[in-house]
Image (cartoon, rainbow, N blue to C red; front, side):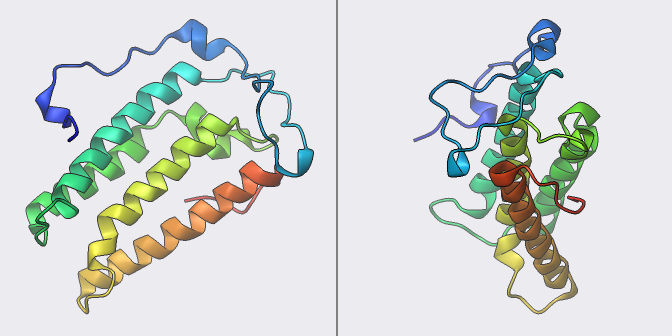
Amino acid sequence: MTLQAGEHNIALPEIDAAADAMPWVAPRAYSFALGACPPSHHSPGWISSCFHWTVRMANIQDAIMKLCYGLRPTRPGLAEWGSLCAQLDGWAAELPAALAIHSFALSTPPPHLITLQITHQKAVLLLHRPFFDHQSSGARLSASKCEDAAENMLKLLEVSSDGVRPPSIA
């Protein structure tokens, strides 16, 4: 049993500018691909903002799971599904530029920002997967969204594993 977003009065975490300004430093126990150390980040780590936006994404994912993957899932109504699409698109549009992967053009982003972006792509997959194999024009859009999200996740994993900048991530 989980606590649903509408069943509590817990506010979104506040963004702490001082915590955001601190550079991200890898914990000593951090495991690195092929033994390589992560790049040093002398720019802000955005840890507080990332947590705030992760919680916002978790609330959207919760609504997706409740609608599409409940104990007795039904095919989501177009209005409900469209509302979740709008929430997901709104989240991406409102995400501060500092938390976007493209803002790290010359360096590897901290892992928490990569994880935030992977979480967004996962939410896109969860929302569009129920319509992936149907034969309507909406299904073709969902298939395209799923394929783009999967490709973006692979690009993000490349960034996190070797620090190489992939082509643009949508």
